Image 1 (tube, one colour):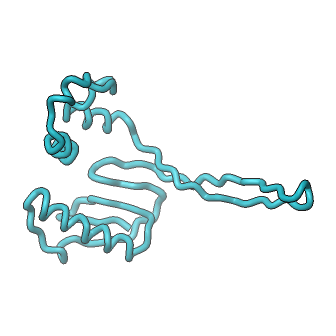
Image 2 (cartoon, one colour):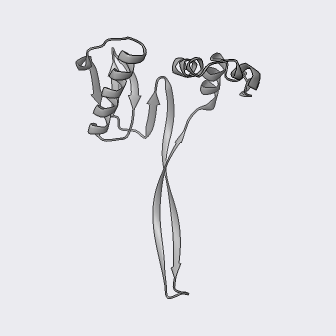
Image 3 (tube, one colour):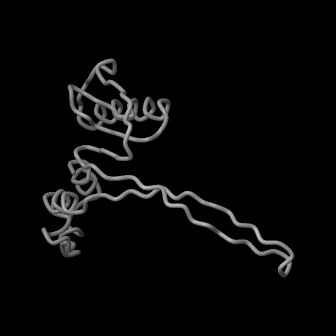
Length: 134
């Protein structure tokens, strides 16, 4: 499923329709409280997404289910249990993310963090506001 507003995709997930409705309400609340942007929730549409990808605010990442097998041995070789565990992994393109973080002056363009003295001079609300703009 993915959430669209004014013809643009904002958030996409392989989750259930109920989960996407919940995220839609969180997005509307976030816009109203943080950006003072009032939108009509009925103008935001949830559509079906068929491929294994995740799209969030312009970043497209691929989603992969990785299966791990765990072997459990109990009571000195009396029996063995093999358990499969599915792990949800996302592969996010790093270069656009570094560009966004560098633009907000958290790191330089090569991804190295800016000195601690620069961060020490910023208040907590300044740091949170800068992350909110990324």
